[in-house]
Image 1: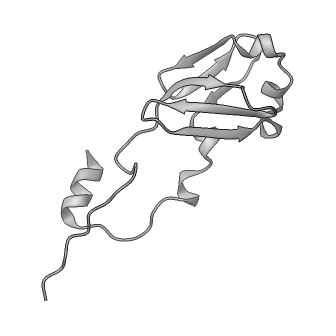
Image 2 (image 1 turned 30 degrees about the vertical axis):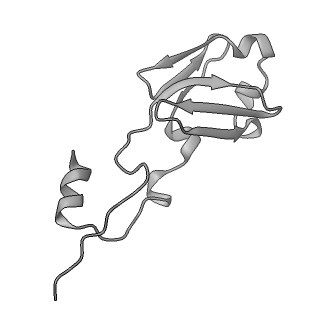
Length: 105
């Protein structure tokens, strides 16, 4: 029996990379990624950002495409802080040999 190769779709090959932040939606911060995704997170999970004024939130620096720090805060945030622990949502199914090789790239 010949195994059929399954084509993967989605962002599994992409490494998330931060492009910019937005605070347009009240009580939320949006992280705009370079691949077009937008991650919106409630500020209640980030009290140090929530306490910053609207003007203070404008002064942030993106560190190595994967981190964020604000001029008026002592915290440094990694992109993983907005996604959660990868082990909790990572795909645990099987891949073909070709897909495994692509994932290793």
